[in-house]
Image (cartoon, rainbow, N blue to C red; front, side, top):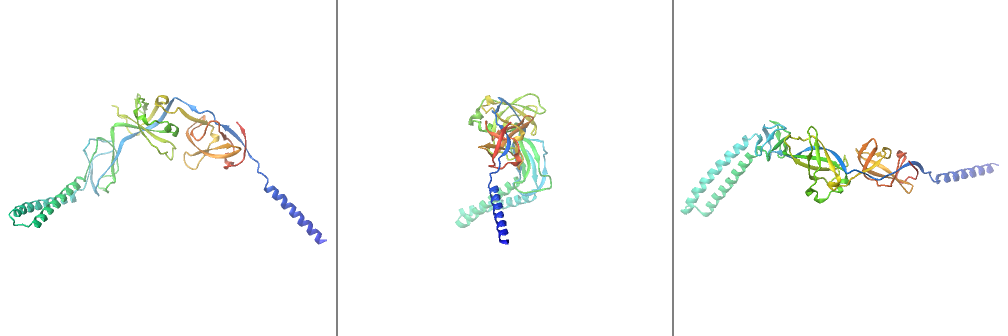
Amino acid sequence: MNLSKLSVVVASALLLQACNNETDHREQPSLLVSTFEVGAPLTDQFRSFNGQVMPAELTPLAFKLAGEIQQVLVEAGDKVEKGQLLATLDNATYKQDLTDAQSQFELASKQLSRGTEMFGSKMLSQSEHDQLTANYKLASANLAAAQRKLSYTELLAPFSGTVSTVDKQRFENTTPGETLLSLYQNDKVYVRIQVSDSILASISPDMRSSSYRPEATFGGHSGEYPLTYLEHTSELHPQSRTYEFWMQMQQPESEILPGTSVTVNVDMAKAGLSDVQGYQLPMTTLQAGAEANQFYVWKMEDGQAFKSEVEVDKISGQGALIAHGVEQGELLVNSNLRKLRDGIQLSGKAE
């Protein structure tokens, strides 16, 4: 009797395990999501880009010697002329070195002059005369070095311009190459804007010679000013995910200072640039990344989800304008984004 009961229990356990194994291998149901089909790109012949005026040819200036700063003769915003004295180091040691070098040079010069006369009278050997000549050359080199070092205690303006910043003050110590102040050219206006990679890709190598000039308006200034192309960066900015595009113009009578806001109006057709703004997507298709300004979408391909990074150009009440990362006709997941994983099976319904 006990053996029969044990057989029943074992058989029941095996049957239950078989049922569990069947359950474990059963296919997971696909996740039901809503989808959004990417439409045609938005185009606009006329585009406006917000930017900022930047210091033209901003140049950090520093002493070539270490020492204590004796004078700082300028402040931020001061206009200076080429060759103007900007700052000085304590030069007492270098003045003494110059005095010593001058004395040694004068002594060596007299000794060589006297020795040359004696050598001509055969009262001095060739080797002794050579030694006097070598002493003279060494003293001359030491004098030139002392004069050069003394000149390094003065910081002169390498060009005419405006002082941007002053980073060190009187009585502070400085080291060779440590920035004391920065100077920029005030006869030019540099403008920097941010552009997407789609615009950058359409820039032609002969843009510098193009006759087209976009118009700029500056905060606090009336009128429009034509700009010319200067340069652009080739590396993506890590935060904004855009590229820097630089333009320039001559400084007008009413001076435009660095930091001024600017709007650059561009006829994309005349400029020979792409007039594609991007693709309009609802905000519900976007998933924020771990870094600032990093966004992803989930694409639905063959019933599966795949995560893809996108470049957001701007966000408005109509949604997000995507500059790069999607194409017309692609299906994007529009719901349950937090439940998605790469390769997960989906069943979608269009919205």
